[in-house]
Image (cartoon, rainbow, N blue to C red):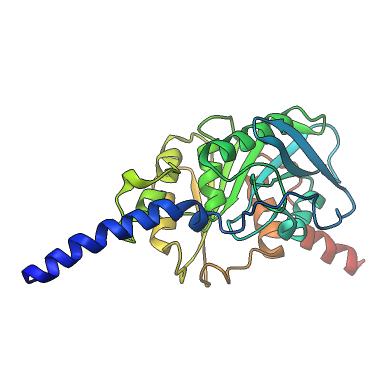
Length: 284
C-alpha cells in the first residue's frame, strides 16, 4: 500500500466511524419513529394491552393468559426483531398460548407509536418493567418465566436474564455480541452505545438454552449461533435451512418444537403439541 493510499485511508476511516457512531440507533432500531399513537391493530381475542409506568412514559406490552392451564403456569416474555412491531407477532405466539403458556410481548420504546426512544437504558428499563409485571400475574408461575428473543431481541433478552431470574432462554437468529457485529464492519467496540453481549450472558446463565439459527443467515452469521450453543452445556440447537429475513418461525416452532422442548425441560405440564392434538381430534 503506497503512502497516498494510507493517507486516504486514515482520512476516510475516522469519517466512517463517526457516521456509524452517530447513526447506530437508526441502524439497530430502524422501525422506531417520533410518532406517538395507540396500538395500530385491533387486539385479537384473548389478548390484553398493558401499559406500565416508566421513566420515559408508558411501557407498552400485550399479554395473553394461557388458555389451557389451571392455576399458575409457565410464561414466555417475547422480544421481537428490530424491523418489527408488537403486532407482527400476534399470530406467531397464539399456538403457545393454546398449548398452556402465557405470553407477554414487549414493545420497544419508540416502536409502533409507543412512548420513549430505543436507547439502551430505556429498552432495558422496559424489559425489566414487563418482566416484573409478568411475574406478579395470578396465571403465571414466577419460577417458570422463559425469556425468548428474535434477532436483536435475543440480545435484549439475554441481557435481561442477567438481571432477572429466567427458567430458560430461547434465542432465535441472535448475535454473539454487538461488538462482534461491529467488527464485521471494521468498527471498534468502544463506539457502541448498546452493550449487548449475548455470549457472555449465555456463559453465565444457569438454565436451559434453546437456539435456532439459519445456515444461510447473511445478517447474523450462522457461526454466531454455533458459538452461543458451544458456550452452554445446557443448550439445544436447531439449524434451519434459511437466511435471516426469510427464516420463518411459524407453527412448526411455536406449536410443535417449543411446547415439546418446554415439556422436556419440565416447564410445561402438557407434552402434546397443538398440531398433534389437532390431528388426534380430527381422527376421532
